[in-house]
Length: 392
Image 1: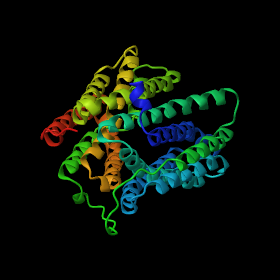
Image 2: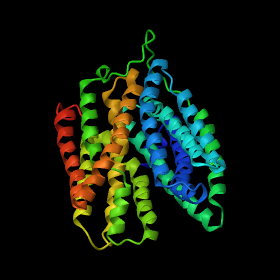
Image 3: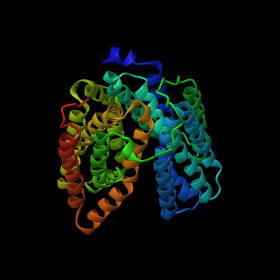
Image 4: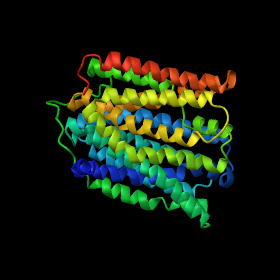
């Protein structure tokens, strides 16, 4: 596995390091926002919900717009560099905020940056390798992204243990932010087909192949059962896991995803994307079913959450690689825009429905719904997307 990884183009590795640094800075701040808002800015849960809800929704919409623009220009790099620069600029300024609406504005800027860069970055990554190495390339990027999600919280914990104030800790995210932008600036723009004449900004999915549109519908079904991971941690706490061990439990999930993403996503280059994604979704369904039916004892949580990390490793890279397999090269940005829009906007209704089922009936009803969506999505994935024998 090491030799094929080292043989990946420089662009893939640079984008991987960019993801690692950016996520380390982002996940250093994200767990501290509730503390900072409540203890420093004296804002409550409603303010936090407003900040996150607006920021994530706008970010999802911008991912489609930026993908369309990248296809029109046949260039992704300016949007990628600009998106990372906006996040790097806004994130440390949170430390200077004196009222929560300023945090809202800065968090909004950070999500705008993510919306600008995500689809063009994925288009760059897909265009940098041939179809036989797409899974490996996206697996490397997702693995390094998850590594940042491990490094960030650990760095925050170590620095806070040394007595660093939360405000100072947030300000120091400027350092990885500068490094992120510097690396993004030296990434080479891969060659992409240029339109023969300027194309109007048309966001209609009808421009994309029917098989890709079916894939979007299947993703939407799966995503309706894929609520916030916070519910998993809430269930772990309800099962008796001490609060101090909750971050370690999720750290185990991220570490597992980091180690296995290149391997499992790379398998999709040989075994087929649909097969690997389907296997990952089955793991997801069984994990949710098991977590919903197991109501006491914490010993099984550690191996279970490690298995959940395997689900992430098997699907995150392969799902993105399948987008590039199904979409025309000149519409990669648009395809990734729709992919991010579907998976982003369904998070809110999925989380609301999950929470309602939990409170109205029982945790088992919520976890059973998520599991049922996963199993139904697997069936449709095989029938609609992989049924014609051309699983890439």
